[in-house]
Length: 422
Image (cartoon, rainbow, N blue to C red):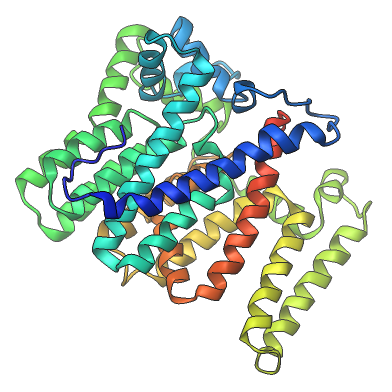
């Protein structure tokens, strides 16, 4: 699973991503297995036990159900059903289970192994296009992003990142046969693969690539087509996987109320939003203090110096996250991702830019706000854009990596305690 189609990915492209992968995964494992059990048990969580169980929670249960008893589907059900989850990840787990591994170990190995492959391919791709500094920063961003937790636990993030990154790189290298193969694997991994196929077709049309590229782009949707065919045969509904998404997102379109709720939770606090009046005055007061402090840093940036301003903003970002929590990460990764793509649109390859825009557009128009941050993390274009930016501003990079590590530890502990993360 770790080998790319390119024989030029040799030892020089392996060391850095392997070190970054190993250090970040060890960091997560220490937080989940050693630190989390020592902390007080939250009212909504549980004490984690040392073992593979810490990597199993929430969506992991659906993948176990698919592997052990197969898919289920109930039309118009308001409860989440397993057909909402795509088949390639359970298939790889099943293969390892045939070799005698238990589900939790197999699922953890598949996701982590695929994520290592994604880092190796990403490093080689960005090094080819933008140089070694950009490759290192981009790889570090993808590995240390707080949402990279989901490339370690039993979720599909690692697998999808591996195949989608390989497909994008193959497209850039005009290796259309490989692009079709990796794209089909990506679209069999999760529904956001739809954005990959759409992006390939748009760029092929824009650049007038020719018939071969069109055929390969359509073939990249092969995983989605086969799963849809299975749903038609098994359940009599070719779009059963899409209908099942209604448990998360009742209707398509921009969720104005959901976004308003997140913004108000950031500004006035979840408690005040829930009750409809200012029951907790400290939240808006602290938010105002953080905003004013940020303005002061910017206003007196020349007197303070660049270093103090940069690290000052990093500290304010951490304080704002401690105050606002998950709604902030949802808003920042979507709005910030859109801004980054636009800011670096002339530096990104066209397929990287278009894929980022299409994938974010689909998320925003999906009809909900649940797990937007986790789903956006799976869009490799955002990590590429941030990596290119930090490669030009190393001090920002060190501050971002420090902030990432704190949030990553927090996310890992929460997941180990069976608390909702994303």
